[in-house]
Image (tube, rainbow, N blue to C red; front, side, top):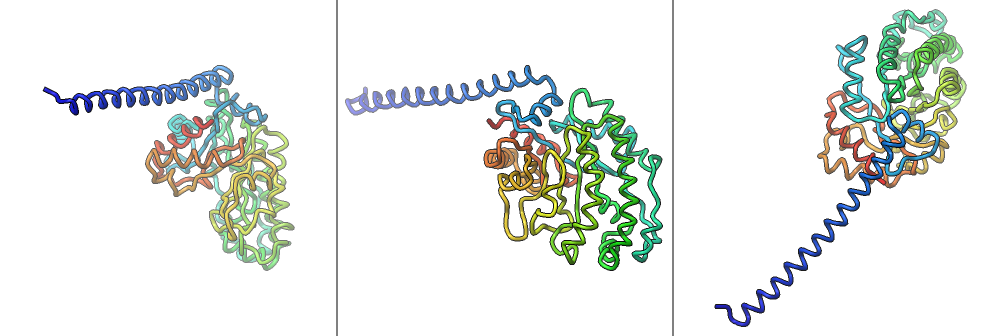
Length: 361
C-alpha cells in the first residue's frame, strides 16, 4: 500500500507528466504549424512559379517568392564528360541531383598552348579562333539548351580574354610579357576579344539565357601597377561582357581568386552583370555581403567556401551554416561557393545546402 508520501509523489508525478505532455504537445503543435506554414508557402510558390525558370526570372525582377533563396554550385567534370552527349548527360544528372535553381555549363574548350609566344612582339602572331574551334563547346551548349531551357535558365561560362591569353602562353609568361611591353600584348588580347565575340554571339543564337563571366588580373601583387589592368586587361574584358549583358537576361560576374586573393574589388566594381560572385575574404579583412552588394550595386552570390562545410560538413552543419549565411545576407541573394567546388565533392552535400537555402524565410 502507498503511504501519504507515496500518494503525494504519485499525484505530483502525474501532474508533472501531464504538464510535460501539454508542453510537448504545444511545442509539437508550434513546430507543426511552422512546418505546415512552410509547406503551404512552398506549395503557393510552386503554384505561382511552376518551374525554376519562372522562379529565377521573378527573382531577377525583384519579386521574391516567400521563403525562397536560390542556390547553385559548380563543378568541373572528369575528362570523359567534357564534351558531347556524355558531357550533356553529366550536366543534366548533376542539375537534377543537386536541385540547383539554374543550369550552368562548364567551359572546357581552352585556348591551345602556343609555343611561339616567347617575346611580347609574338602576340601579334596570334590567330583568330573561329566557330570551328568552339564547335565542341557549342555542341554541348545546344544539347543543354534543348534539354532544359523550357524548365530553367541556362548559363555558360565565359572566361575573360586575359584568362584565355594565359592558356595560350601560361599565366607566368603572360604576366612577364605584359610588364615588358603591354602594347604588344594588347594586340594578342584584341585577337582573343574577336574570338570571344564569335563565341558569345553563337551561344546567344543557340538560346542561352546568359553567361557566368569570369575575370582575373586585378588580384593583389599580380601586376606591378594598377594601370596595367585598367588600361590593358579591363578594356579587353569589357567587350564580350558588355555584349553578353546587353543581350541576355541573367549574367553573373565572377571575380575569380583561384590564383591569388584581392586587396579590393575597386577595379572591377563597374563591370557588367546582374549578380556578383566573389570571395568576401580580402587581404585586409572580410567584407559582408551587404558591403559587396552595395559596392557592386547588385545582388550577391556565394557564402560557402569551396573547401568548407559544403565539401566536408555533416548535413546538420551544412544546414546551420546556410541559415547563418542567408540570414545575414541581403534579401536578394543566391547561395553558392566562392569558386568552383572540388570535383570529388559529394553531390548530396550540395543538395543539402541548396535545399536549406530554399527553406529559409
